[in-house]
Image (cartoon, rainbow over all chains, first blue to last red; front, side, top):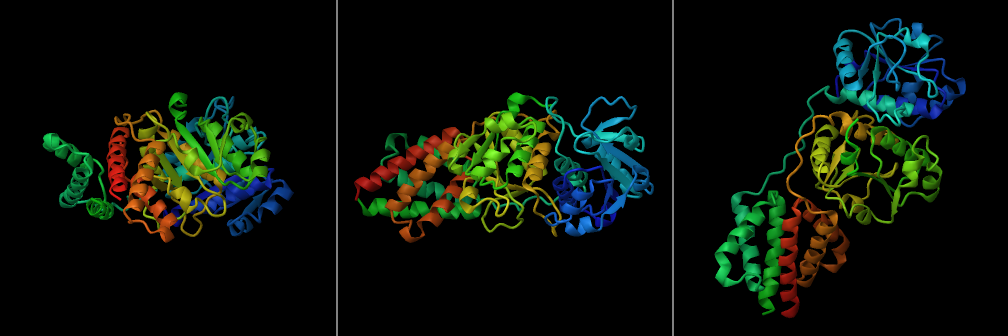
Amino acid sequence: MPDPAEFDNLRVVLVATRNPLNLGAAARAMSNFGFLRLRVVNPYDLAFREARSAVGASELLARAEEYKEVGAAVSDCSLVVGTTAVRSREVRHSLRPLKQGARLIHKEFRSSRVALLFGSEKVGLSNEALSHCHWLMHIPTREDHPSMNLGQAVAVCLYELTRDSRSLPEPAKLQLASADESERLTSVLLEALRTCGYLHPESATLTDTKVRRLVRRLRLSAQDAEVWVGMLRQILWKLRSGK
Amino acid sequence: MPDPAEFDNLRVVLVATRNPLNLGAAARAMSNFGFLRLRVVNPYDLAFREARSAVGASELLARAEEYKEVGAAVSDCSLVVGTTAVRSREVRHSLRPLKQGARLIHKEFRSSRVALLFGSEKVGLSNEALSHCHWLMHIPTREDHPSMNLGQAVAVCLYELTRDSRSLPEPAKLQLASADESERLTSVLLEALRTCGYLHPESATLTDTKVRRLVRRLRLSAQDAEVWVGMLRQILWKLRSGK
């Protein structure tokens, strides 16, 4: 995962969260993606206390900083970004889709602190909270059902922020079967097909070619090719001994 | 948002989900991102009934299809992708990070059905469930805390699938074999292996799973799958008649 020093510059700020499960889920996603600095503004007291038992994120919640006002919670941040499900706010904020917004946040949190605000489950961010934001960000969702669950919205935003943070290693490439190995498989398959009468001698050449192409299209790994050859040899042995 | 007709080809398959909140959250994220086809395999009964009241996703849950086995739930899908938090499975599946995996899923679901599997909260996907998968996908998370909440993992995966939906690659040209067709090939191959003594009864279940994975890794076209089934049937016939 990415450089923690850089991630240390993001403050996830949950404003007036009501549901302890959402607080816990947000904290868990932060922990999953390596953002460990949570700030809460006026959470429902009970919600905050209950959330502290969230799976795998209790330490992060215990270290969360609590504020009475959004202004205080973002005072040391040079960029403040609000999130919203609404597409056409009356407020005159720029609204960016997550993908573009995350790019700008990235540039910023290399060198200075960024606050990412999430509002309450029912009403989102208040106008007062919005007034502290430089711009707003939204997750592109379906028009018929734009509003995401809070914990899921946090997870998706943080995923996007880590998405390009390093070039991930490609999956271990399988060693593909060599032409030799493919040809060995082709031979034993052809032999089995001849033995069981699948191949007619008069069209043999044509079919040989077809079977060879069929085997090449498998794109077998070297390891799998060996297994197939083993299976077919056993089949062939049985075919012959049964004659 | 993207073309619903295309999204209609994705089946989100939740296997053995325990917590109704997670089922509901998964359904809500599906609705947010425009994937409306949910399948559930052996959910805890109570979980499934309670989840049907999830915010904004009740219709989707009401239309969810219920299955007893993973095999049945993916039988009409030509690509089956499992999700996992584990980085180094002992099984020899390719493991792709979400970003790369989503690209491959995109190519496929333009023209044919794709199943995306999520396992249970406690243990993820079982070996049996994994044996139906062509490859596995993981969300890159922090090593110290890799395991995501189920609803959040679903949201992040679906977000990635819609993220670049406007600039999609060309559809794959070949119609790939459906899970049903692959299973037919698996069956006749297993039968042949049993008949010729390649499979030992005491290790049968283990080997069944291995052979199923072996066949899935072939990524056969529908046409080639038919040819293979034909060849193996002929071989099997001969094996039996020679006895």
